[in-house]
Length: 304
Image 1 (spheres, rainbow, N blue to C red):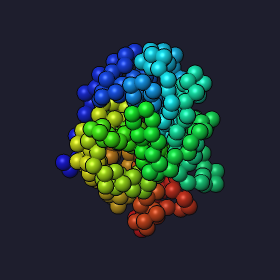
Image 2: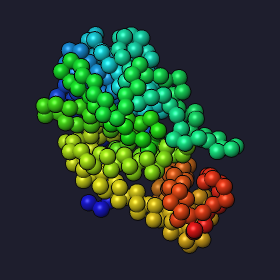
Image 3: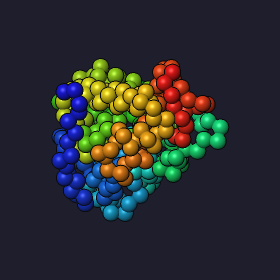
Image 4: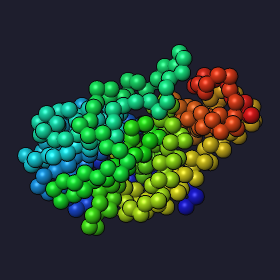
């Protein structure tokens, strides 16, 4: 597989809890959109005492579905993959109701300091109030009632992005958040995210031998090693396309997006521009492209 075969066949079953593996339920929030697909997936793990992964956005109908799926059972832990507002805001409400311990890599932060006069275009999408009870570093294992969860720090989409590996028995799977999804590539948007971090996180996952991933949006990632290799190839090809546009004389990101993403839904062109910026940041950092001052969305770019 040289390019990932994205799978958009997914039934969200809004308002229902859907079994996706032994003692794992998926509840998909009704927040469909061009960047969220059919909505954000929350997962409930366990039989008696539960863990919840990514409680989701502040949405009353989603909260009611989560409550019904939990069905009065105790919740010992809440795991949060990252602090975008479609994943983490319901954490506070669930913690207040259940007393669960909140686990995440850390609070929201940018992947690098903001440059002078730079404005973070994604500031409003971040849950800046979120603070975990446990800031879990890479490899940190937390055990619960019949399950164990290992934190895999996977920066790229956000600096604090973490996947969680459910280990033991026949359940070797990863809750991959927005890092790897079957339906589309993850948005890498500076300064929240960084392409170099994203690629390094893919390399880390390739060292593992997981059976499948359950992502933050859409259906499962099957044969994850093969898919992640193809995802790396896709990103390298996109990088070469960006560099090729610079070599052909495109100086502005807007012009590159028009050429590279001409067949993409125009509603996604803003996100595409941020991904192009992420590639250009990486290329500038490696000395292949130059710009005046730090890389910026409205900067001009030239071959080195």
